[in-house]
Amino acid sequence: MPKAREMLKEASKRTEGHEFYNSLPKGYARGKTKYIVITGSVISGVGKGTFSSCLGNMLKVFGGFNVVPLKFECYVNYDSGTLNPFRHGEVFVLDDGTETDLDLGTYERMLEKNLSRSSFVTMGRVFKTIIDKERAGKYLGRDVEFIPHVTGEIKGFARRLATESKADVVLIEIGGTVGELQNSLYLEAMRELAYEEGRENVCFINVTYVLQPGSLGEQKSKAAQLGIKTLMSVGIQPDIIVCRSENPISEKIKEKISIYSNVPVERTIGFHDTRNIYRFPTFLKESKMDEIVMDILKLRGKTELSEEARKWKELAQRVEKPEREITVGITGKYTTVHDSYISILKALEHTAPHLRARVNVKWIDTTGVDDNNVKEAMKGLDGVIVPGGFGSRGTEGKIACVRYARENDLPYLGLCYGFQMAVIEFARNVCGLDGANSTEIDDKAKHPVICILPEQEEIGGLGGTMRLGGFDMAIKPGTLAHKLYGKAKVRERFRHRYNVSTDCIETLESKGMVFSGMAPGKRIMQVLELPGSRFHVGVQFHPEFTSRPLNPNPLFRGFVEACLKK
Ligand code: GLN
Image (tube, rainbow, N blue to C red):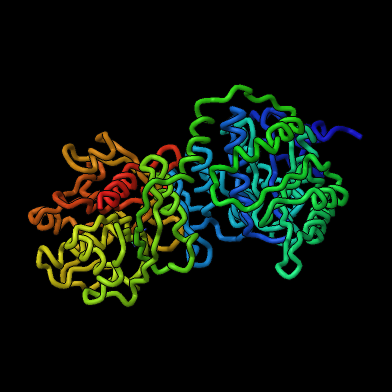
């Protein structure tokens, strides 16, 4: 049988009368980049993304490899921009402005790397690419089919990422679980990828779940076996099985899974619940995961322990041994879904090893909060955060929280919407601008202190249309922001439509509000602070998106530090 490689070469020369579709980008060298494909079975939501990011961290930190992730998302939305965080968790924003699933945030944090839109592909994006190409006549003469064209485009995304990132390893996470119609095209594309790249270049890992029903008290592997069988029925033989479970996996269970799946017991790895994510990479290394992966992919990694590895190990220990504890209130309407604010929770956690403190979070539903009962809502708090948000629900309660924080010198950090709330509160209660509001909340506000960005006025449609992604910012010398960042030029990530109205900047400043960060050359205010207070800071951007475990965002660090000075 002719080699897949030769058949593809041939396909790139001819299109007519051929069943292959060439998805090799220009300059692509097969074997240069290895692929690890991670699928899930049994149930979703058991930490496939967490496992993948920890695997990436282990390969990077212990093995010294350039690891780049790629998430294949099942939904048909073009990106995550229009998703409701209450249903789907936080919308994460990349530096290039792509609105993604929260998993990309986990990857950026665990790999300490800025990712681009090439690392996030939805089924909607795959289809749009194909329709656009078809209309441009790129498939001229051919009927465009799921196989080979759709699967070809999917492989194309993976290979383009490999080429442009010069990755040693592309870590591909397939959304959903095997057996769903939604991800069947991705799975078929991955089967083809392994066939074309060669088995020594693609490693399949199935993350399954071992149930332990309370009524039985013992672990049961049947669901895992069936899940793996479903994967095998689409032509994918896993190389490694990762068994997620509540408690450590017994040898008996590993053996059972091994027999049913053709995966040796040594490659059936238990990965049970642990609270501390920073322990996982070391745990994977101790399970010899790195040796197994390198053996399958014929890779050779570093052997000596790097300084970076030492820092991650230290981080894992420090997170577990706090010396102090504080409680921070976070207001928000998605208070039932903790994933809606995952990056904020992580950014707070990142300060822990540096400040040796555990930050507990209390969620505050602001829909019923006002100036009369706000004291009750703020009880026991060492600081308060008003995070990003849209629409009018709960905003009066948020403004009451900001007022309480300002008047009682309780550390305050306003993130995006929280920045705008702080401007409204100050305008109303300090500058005497009664009825000050944002036009997002009240388009007939007497004092529209927050209004639509000029560049946004003409924009119609939703999805990818806000002021999005990383922008440079000028920090005013002599301010708290300058002290925290330690420099005059920083870059942060934005996702907004509204900003401080230029008409009211002077009034706000005359009463003591300091705008310490601005868009260079523009009158877009991006950081506010109140000198003389312990910490009263609002930022028009999302510092939580750039915070990293070994490198906490300076604003979160400053905020937690202020909360600690009780
Ligand atoms: N709704 C506000 C705006 O569009 C704030 C956005 C946010 O908090 N991300 O400007």
